[in-house]
Length: 250
Ligand code: BEZ
Image (tube, rainbow, N blue to C red; front, side, top):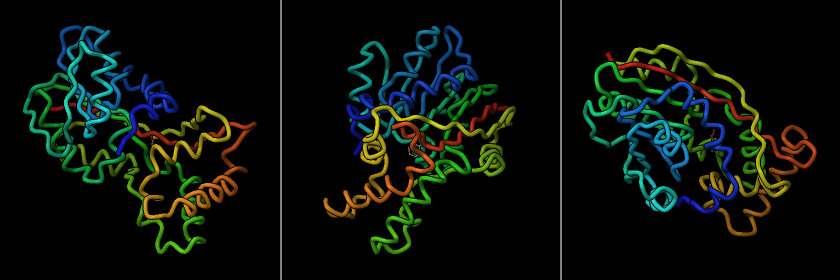
């Protein structure tokens, strides 16, 4: 269950770093644009400021409720990218930091392609190959030491390579114009407690089966093991790697 208040209070970097997606999107006045995984609506508001008519879609009712409270003049809809049924409606579809939650990437690619008008563009940014690799290594170590069997099985995310993801977009009938995979070390707001808050926001898949005490033990183990690579002067800097792609529908 997403917590929009925790998201907005501590994870503003998600949409602040999303500005690169908007540069590639280059929204123009009068365009109809779909934001897939809009969260609490901040990037959609940026697109609306450019004069486009934006619709924000997110699978979480709680996030959509918060987006509507944040931007009452904009349109937000609860919905899942895998099952959305838009057909040739949008000049552009974009997504920031959402599609790595969707393991059925072929289904999502087909639905996003279908939503585009012919000639329309898709701009997506998601965690790519190698994303948070150092963090995941210590997560698996910590869970293994705590007796959890096969910790990588708990990983809910999809962090594809350039080749794997572009093949999926091409399989959905899109032509890829630009793609890049780049490291983007990301400082977390909020000092020493920030990594624990990151897990509270995003890491439920790893901790939900643990008792309260075991969850604390897990977080302390991860912090202790990750500190020498990810903690600098009291700031957690997570080893994010982004995959950004621009593609067109024929
Ligand atoms: C990411 O944006 O790369 C990300 C966010 C939360 C969990 C995992 C990855």
